[in-house]
Length: 136
Image 1: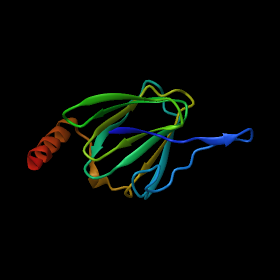
Image 2: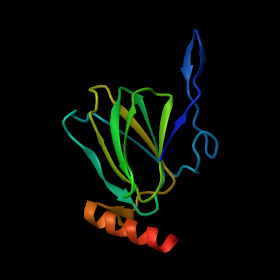
Image 3: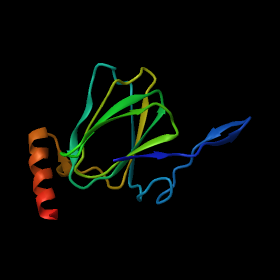
């Protein structure tokens, strides 16, 4: 879980932010999607991934993230298009407080795989603690 500053480039003609594999994006991108039209009173996400890594960028508007690796819970505000949020595997994520104009772009290092999802928080905590015990 870390934020990444993206470099805007531009002049009087307008602005551009480039996202290249293994440069601004710290992994090879295999899937890209975006979320939009989400009501501000809804929470999205509410899951973790066993193996997936993602980079989230609000290209328009803003939203908040709650990230939880089973040891630390931290909130992030994505409120500018030059800030990316790098989310590794085994991190519970919830997105909320979407502005009406929010477009959340997500780049992922793997294709969609339903078996990679952990959709129950208690199950996530069990998996995360088990993984942490294996590392020690």
